Image 1 (spheres, rainbow, N blue to C red):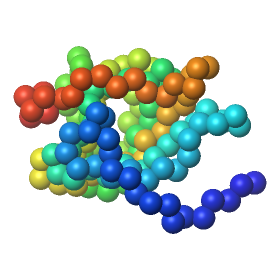
Image 2: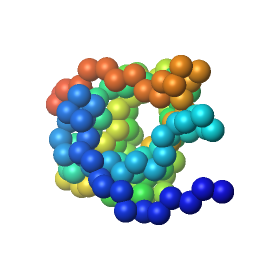
Image 3: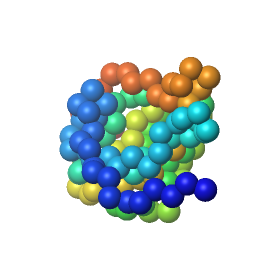
Length: 131
């Protein structure tokens, strides 16, 4: 068993990956023991990820607030605390807060055989966000 005491610092979400104010707390990164990576991600109102996809899919567990998740061809879905969203491998998507509420989730994904967990794409436009 390995125990990690809390107390790490929150980091700002990189501008290449997010629009708006986002804070991330790393939970674990893939390593030689497991391919699982996860983080607790907090989005200010209107903040969101860029379009992206994961080689082995992604699971989101909403912990607080009201958010949105969307796929390129599936429309926008509202998400709330306790909701679990599974995104298929390779499915292009984005997620973030609604325009008027904060949202936080735990994002979980698995690295592929090359250690890749995500491929970042273009930013979500204001028109796509408000659709």
